[in-house]
Image (tube, rainbow, N blue to C red; front, side, top):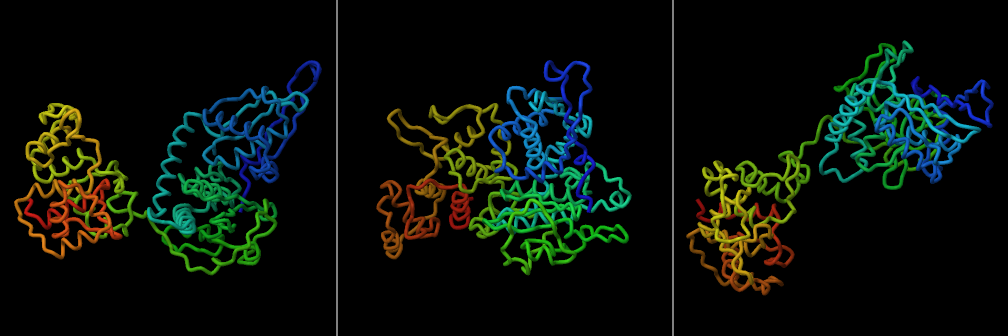
Length: 505
């Protein structure tokens, strides 16, 4: 399966620096070849590294990130073995540094002085390639459902993404001309072409993005690599390459439309050795004993999981989605997201935000034509700033009587950044209607039955009773929470109910 890329077989050249008195001038330098594959197999675990090796690895990774030509390591007092291990750690854990080729290590009698970093592509091209890889990772992560709670589901979605979007580089494999990129996460995710090492690197890199640990294991006897994934403390073999349908007689990849196989997904050691062609002689050897998912009927993923209205901080099952609240406020332009992908449903709704929402609904023409750079504070309250996104709404809210302001020791204030409480929002909404609401005895008894009804402010009690009568406010768990800040989702619900139940034009 062509596990070893030419760039991985390329050695770290260990060249002896000419120095007195350790090496006499004119003495022919000797070169020691160390195969990176052997380093990776021997030093495949972070736990095996001492503090100095980890420090070296960080320094080397930073140098590669910066596309430096070399690094002075003389201050570390490092041995060749420590530098070997540090480079192996960088190779094993930083799949975004795919462009690093060989490393020349200079030393005097085994004490490393400096290293030279060599890249497989020109640095100008690497900058573009890194941007392409970051974008490809973002695309892959859209397949991880916004409401996926199980790491097993996340692992399956990313497995399916790779199978459906990458083809095995069979023709180059058969011809012995596999390019360097086919062994990397870049080739897998950006070019959509890889051999087994590329699949394994890409899978480990994607799993890392969603907080799932994994290890790339390899077998010299098979010339093959795959992953061991750790989920909820259990280890499982996953071979994305062999789950990607490919005909070795024709070289045709199964492609996007073929069913994704799960023959080698979440397997134990024993089953990995016996299933299909059988895997064997792999290193490192983390123990995989859990068999519960070996005959599991897995969901098959075939595209991005789209959250409601592209907001990734809510799910289709959230109450504010199933109730139609988000649909209404978004489609009517009343409450906008805080970004393209975030609605912040559980963030507090501020008084300035509430005034703006109501202005958009009741005065759509004026709010649509608003130009904040030309608007000054006309509320008479000094805490409203001129030429802000909310200044026009604040002016309207005070003039219309929606908001009366808050009495403070310094005088009446608008308090634009204060959260709106649940009792405040029903008071303000009821101000906007001429509807007369009669409160019957049952509603009064219901109000009194809530454990925290006595905490309602005296000025809000009548409005709370009226809102309870028409269903504008709804208790939960035996509480009304009158003094609690109103979230953006709750604010949306209050506004939608007011529009439906009250004579608000």
